[in-house]
Length: 238
Image (cartoon, rainbow, N blue to C red; front, side, top):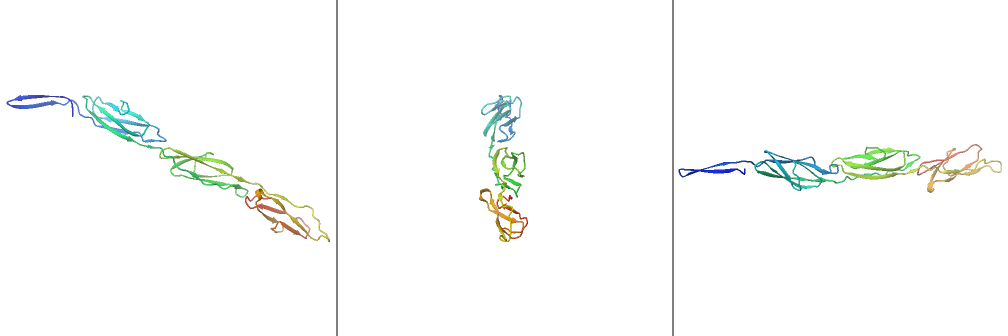
């Protein structure tokens, strides 16, 4: 308690002191709307004090009960009530702007046998947003191209991004066969060679209509013969 006045009364060698106290130190508290983060660029501090005629004075300036701050640190407010009594309170504001970490698996290549590939992201406690609008951790696609991902941490609103490319290899091999071969008494058999050109020199598998699997077919019986060649890397065929 502080302030006021005192009067001394004397009687028969005895003294009596009577004081009039005119104010009491207020009780003060500070609340905060949140701490600073990527989602909360500013924080509102709210001071509350007991007593009448309360006035506030914040460190760094400000005389309202509320103060908006955008930097971490310690903030102090002094509350003064009628009569001049006062109290001081401090509050510490922290900042969390740590971005999440995210990675994406290497997707497989789209080929003639694998028409759908799957993306999967690695991150925790985040919301996902892919460039194609997908919002799940993983998804599948049939379209080659560059896919980007943005993740937002649920704890502080901070973001991180990553991207991956889906490649496509659907090139069929080129196949050339001799046509209209003739067998006769002088030429009882013929060797037919499947001439194949595959992408980047890929090896191929041969499947002749008679069950043979070599590049050459020895023919000794008239008829129609066919062959299917399949690229061993992308499974495309001709």
